[in-house]
Each structure stands twice: as C-alpha cells, then as structure tokens.
Image (cartoon, rainbow, N blue to C red; front, side, top):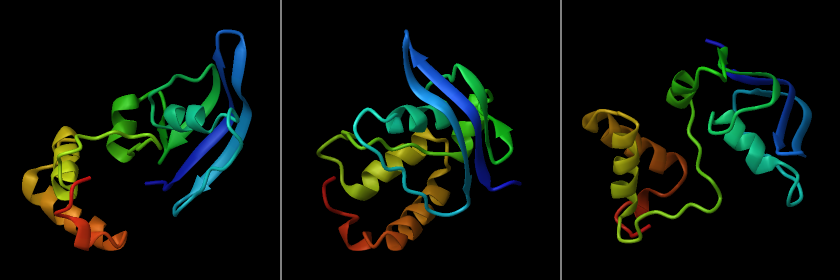
Length: 131
C-alpha cells in the first residue's frame, strides 16, 4: 500500500469564494505540519483530506485510495480539529475507548492501541485524568 497523500490541482469554493487554489502537494509517511495565517485554507484542506468536504476540482488520493471513496478514506485516517469539545467528565482512556468504538475497533484491540498511543505521545500518566 502506498503510504502518502497526493493532492493535484485541488480547488474548493464556498459559493463564489475560493478557499483552495490549485493545491499541489505530496505528503509522505511521517509527521507533517500545516501552517498559515487565518483564512489561508488550512481547515478546509484538512476537512477535504478527511473526506468531510467535497473538492470542486482536482485529484486527491490517500494511500492510493481516491478521496471520493469516503468510507475507505475514513478507515485509513483520523481527523481531530483544533477546537474539539469532548464530554468533559470523560477520562482520557474513556474518551479514546469511545472514539475507538465509534470507529468499529474491537474492544480488546482498542485497549492495546490506547496504551501504545498514549505512550507514544507521552501521556500514559494522564490516562485516568479528565479530558
């Protein structure tokens, strides 16, 4: 499986306002930062890559899967917006378990992933604290 996101000549409009202008970008496996001023189109691009918004034109593939196959894309990706409100009384591991259930991940596998992911991001000691 290809492990990259390919974006070719992508455009997105909100009515007559163009939010994305001929975006050409290849994102290889690894960590990638998306920076820009307010209104630059960062959120629009992210929502388009997560198959939450439709593009007007151009091509996008995620791991070789065309963005139009939204269900397949959502299995491969996750999207967490900057302003994300969760149930404030949930503990970190409860919130992750809930999100895993929404994604259809079996409970035993989810518990293993939660521990592994919390270790990777140095939050294991916060797993029982409220979000």
